[in-house]
Image: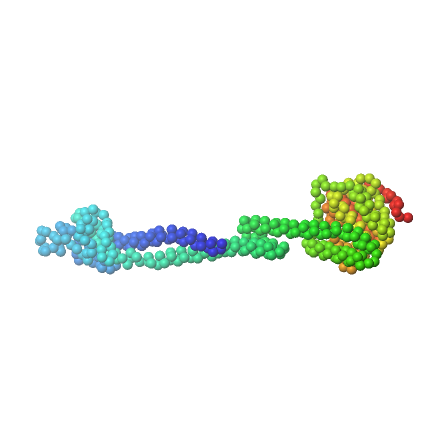
Length: 480
């Protein structure tokens, strides 16, 4: 593109220079010719007063010698002039001859034609041109003054003028090439950066972006490319999130399988089953960690999507209660005696509850009690999942995606699933100490989509305006 612009500019500039330089050169030549003949006319006019007074040879030769710059002037006086008798054959001669002073270069017929027409004319002669200027004598006859204009005088300074004109044209062409090259660089560099960024993005460098510089079209192309790159990154992140979420949902059946395998007792088959379950858990963890490389994005809640939180909690607690009974865990459920509508998809709430309850079974000892409470406020719903385990020493690290402790095999994705569910409604998640003595995970689900004001301690959440009274917990039948 750069060289194409240079070639186009050279062609256009050359055409313009030729279009102006050729006529201008011809004008300069005509001006030089006019200047030479103007000088000749002035020389001829210088002796016109003398011819109007006298035609004496001696006097005219003196005038011609003083007026002409060289021997290029001649005077032709016709025969029959009375005053020219002094130059005739004798003092009393009746017939006078024509008088010619100086060297004649023009042909006799040209001189006669000029005398007859009575106006100046030019004629070509060897080595140049002559100016024939008619002059009226006192006797009424017409004399002709001949001024020789050599070719060197006609072309005097013409070569220099043409050289200057050619130099100016060449300078214009060079200048146009320089300007076109700069413009080409200004256009080519953004295009090259666009190509390089496209190659980098194709090689997997998702951070490749194009500076929005250069002409308008290239800036628009850069904006479109950057938008496309952001969409690609978003799509890849969403795919990784989906893979991680789906893999994490395998934790629930794996937990059940692990617990059932633990109750098989001793024997080669039981050991092989437990080893296979452990291997499967490690593979799932590997999938989760690999899929979690991209930055997580907040899940969007589709318009009109919602579910009954109380129904979902009852259903999931029925499932986990069977496992809790096998391990001797006491379970408490409260706030699910009436419908509680929330703007969250049923599958997302199921995944969040399974993630939290699966963590309880995974990271607390057998026999540890846990509880799930649902608080239905005026503009928010709070879901509390608490246990009587050892608690979480560093809640911030637990909430940070991918910072789960390697000692217990946690990937940190379970809490992140819960966080994304709450933030999709404008709420949040807090971790604190429960009344049972262990961990309490508080999920604030916003009903009106407004950002809550986060205050308080122990992971508590407060609103700007007070919500209506939360329902009183039902006393659990499973706990003393």
